[in-house]
Image (cartoon, protein in one colour):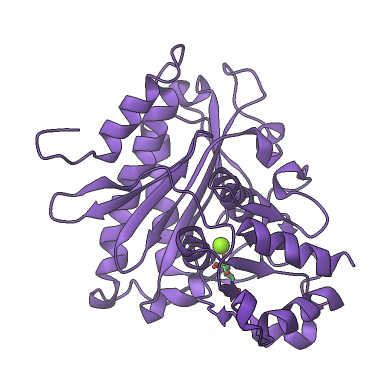
Length: 337
Ligand code: AHM
Ligand code: MG
C-alpha cells in the first residue's frame, strides 16, 4: 500500500511474489503485461462509439466460421504485442488465431510460460455498448524452456493452470485473477490509470437466486435434465426463494462475474446445433472454472469437472455448468438423473 491507502495491481503482484520464495518474477511480469494490455483495450472499448471504423465486422471469419469484429482483432493484436514484446511467455493460443502463435525471440523461447486467451469475449455485445471481457489462462510449459514451445504445452488440463483471470469492461473495468491462492479483484481508476485492489479474497455465495442461460435455446437443449432444472428454477417455492431470476447478458464474463459476487449459476449445455456445447475449453471455460473453484464454486461439463478434462484440440468446445456450489450440484443431479 502506498501513501494514498490504495494498493495497485502492480504493487499487489509484487507483494504476492514474496509468497513464492524461489520464483523468478516471470509470472508476476506476465500478469503485469496483461494488466497493461487490458488498460489499452479498456481505452478503445470506451471510445468505440466515437471512432469511425472500429465498430463492426472486419469481413473476415475466424476459425469457428464466425465473423470477426474489428474490436476483437484490435484486442487480439494489443495482447499479442504486449506478450511478445517483453518476452515473458513462449506462445499464445487465441480464439482469434487458428494455430498457436509461437514466439521465436530468444527471451520468449527461454520463458517458462504459455497463455491461452480470448482477447475480447462477448462479440455480439461489442457494437451495442454492453459488457464484454478478456479471459486468460497461464500454464507452465512442458517442453524444454530453451526451445520453441510445442502443441503439448497448450494441450494441458485446466488443473495445471499457474494463473487465470478475466477483465470485464463493464460500468467500470475490473481485472480479477487467481494464482491458486484465492481470487482478488481490481477496479480500474481511469483518473490515475491504475487497477486498484477493490475486492480482496473473493468468496462466492454457495447459493444465489439467479440463473443465466440462453433460454431461447429451450427447444434445442439435448438434455431433458436441463429442461427439468429450468422448470425447477421457475417453480414458485417461497421457502427456497424460487422462482429464481433469469439474467443473461450474453457475455459469459459478465454473467459469471455477477454469479461470483452475488451467487448464481451460468449454463451453456449441449444443444442440437452445438452438441459438444458452444464455449471453448482452453480460453473460456478453464480459466473461469479455476477462478470459480478458487472462490468456492463448482464448474462441470455435466459429466466431468471442467479442470480435469484433457484437451485434444486447442479450440475444443465443451458444455458448462458453473457457479455457486449448491446450484451447480443441483443441476448436475437433474442432468445425471
Ligand atoms: P464469442 O466468443 O463469439 O463472443 O462467444 C462466446 C459468448 C459468451 O460470452 C456467451 O456466454 C455466449 O457466447 C453467448 O452465446 P449465445 O448467443 O449463443 O447465447
Ligand atoms: Mg469468446
